[in-house]
Length: 85
Image 1 (cartoon, rainbow, N blue to C red):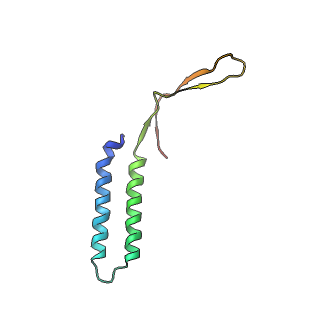
Image 2: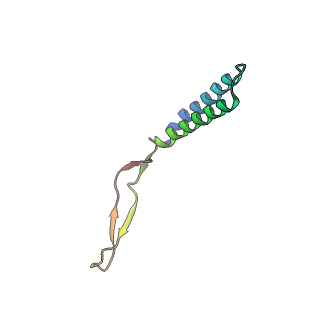
Image 3: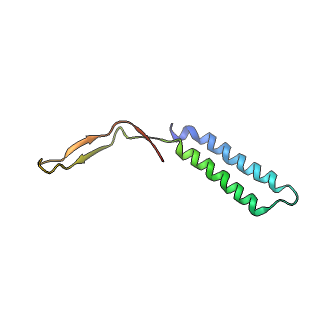
């Protein structure tokens, strides 16, 4: 899917991470360092899901491959979609 379509889910996940950490920080005796680690983990998961949702269109990519016995390189047209890993 296009990253634009995943943008709303990313925003919601980030907002939820901050809401969760805000609520955890409001509890008496909460561990600030643990809260920060939890926030970091939640944000990294949200960003990872967002980036991993991308489909990369490579249908317009054209490369040339040199073949030693031929005088000119051969064009190679790539067709399809890929995913970011």
